[in-house]
View (cartoon, rainbow, N blue to C red):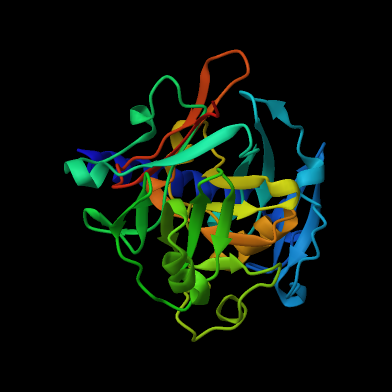
Length: 314
């Protein structure tokens, strides 16, 4: 049934896409040729802030996107906001949801649902959760790569050139570990929670070479809904989720959106230094608890073996 619903959503979205692109050709042209540019909505106008043929190799920590977000208060230690982006093809209407988290106030842990032979969605996060999202990539019913939950290693690391890791230490600090350092991090034995994902989008502000030139193992043209996590100034983490921004919330779950290089640009534009792509597509989902109690949710259409849950730090 889920596959049928997903196919129906994609079919409706494709029709909306065809009509929307044809109906807004003039507006689309000022963002550049297909695949060449990303624009952000600012009031009644679109401002182009990234072009593929002039894409920076390194991001210096400035945040042209974060500065345009009207931040809304969530539960203690959490703020969130949205931007409207426009790119080429199916990315012509993309909503970017950004959550800013202070790990000193929010404790992150993993829900290793696969250990109980079940799948996880944000509905499983619990009433005490102030943040929830799906984690890294997976194969069938198992997460790909390293998993540490509650200080216990559940799955061993795997190596791939762009497979980094998100690590939460005993003090609650959150770091993104580069692929070549995952083995060293594991040997320290200090991870309280950890999971791997791929590809790295930024390493110390630099876009990895395979995201800048083709033929290096990354499909640079594929478009999809995206989810990414990064570390930023002050020890905070940022989470970015893209949604197809046509015909309301239901169509938001359609897996249309940005390329991997474009998502790297988004995270760089948010002021990120180290950024890692998580599992997006139809798995992409997130929950943010509001300051007044009710949660704002962006559901996916598929359960996953591993979830990330944030709860108030005690």
